[in-house]
Image 1 (spheres, rainbow, N blue to C red):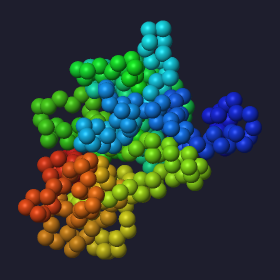
Image 2: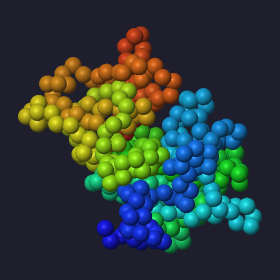
Image 3: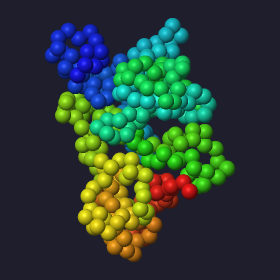
Image 4: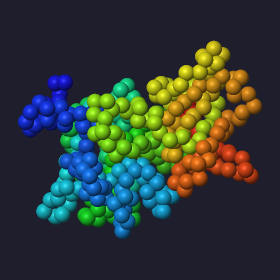
Length: 342
Ligand SMILES: [Zn+2]
């Protein structure tokens, strides 16, 4: 418990330190803006897209009438310099290691951005900080950072045609799991000739969970908070079976793999993926060859109709002629998950 005093420096009593630390663990806020946890604080915490309410800065299907997905949260600036530019220091949300820096805003709609890798409860999780003015000079992949350490400065960078106005200045924060560590090889094979400016750290290799849900759960549950439990409590939309003995996702996230005596006995021939509305395979069930009989390389096991009838979810499966099938987007997604570089 030695580090707590450092995190909450300035606290007066041990009691205050404890309360503060519980809220900041395992994830601290990336800026001084903590209005998310205040009642009615939403408008002071989130920034909406141009001309839209603040709720469009939340995570999820919050854009284009609920059809467009926002993979992170947009956190409003608190500080400006004499030119009106945001200058909030950006802090690492947890102890971690730098894995990627994009210092060229023209290469991404995220502008200048940074990705850190963390291990929380043994789970490999990534934080991504986008639209930065700059990443802290000298901070390069491989560098270790401590929770709360300054890693950059808030900015308004992006390569999109519409610029982020000073009034809408924000940090785009993501908390992600990693779908594949072989994105670059998959891209070369699947989309030959098409540019991939970010190698294995292309945005498609990561899948975001809701950071606001994490902060709220931490605040509500204190020391009882569990990232694993939060991931396991996602809403099921559908299940898809993919063939293959070796699934990188199952190896990387053994915490999400369920026990199946048949597969243990006869050997694993494929995996049943339980997906949330954004396609996060938050539960994985190994399946034996016998259990896969008659199934293709990827096939739909089941769909929760009540969830699938909502407008906003990732259509990795579609109904054709009354039968649920893997969609074109789903084929790419599951192919990426199954991919192993030769
Ligand atoms: Zn955003």
